[in-house]
Length: 97
Image 1 (cartoon, rainbow, N blue to C red):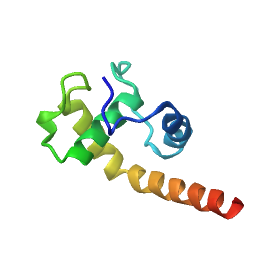
Image 2: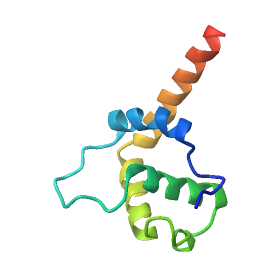
Image 3: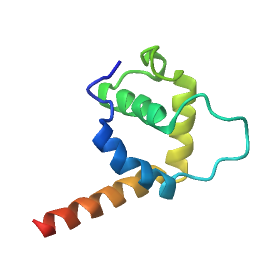
Image 4: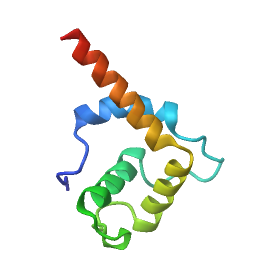
C-alpha cells in the first residue's frame, strides 16, 4: 500500500544511486528482509506523520528495524549528506532552466 509519504518510482530512481554514496558500509550479516526503499518509506512515513515508531503501519518493515536503520544512517551523517546532494542537484537543474 502506498502512502502520501511513499517514494514514487521517479523519486526512487533519483535517490537509489545517491544512497550508495552516502550510506555507511554494512557489516557482513545475513541478507536483509527489507529493501532500502522500504526502509526509507518507513522513515519518511514516521517523519511526515509524527507518529511514534511503534505506530508504523504493519505493511511497512517492523518499526524496530526502521528505527535502527534511521539511527545508524543519522549517526553516520548519511541523511545530511543525502540532503546536501539533493540540494546541489536541484540548484544545478534550476541553473539550467
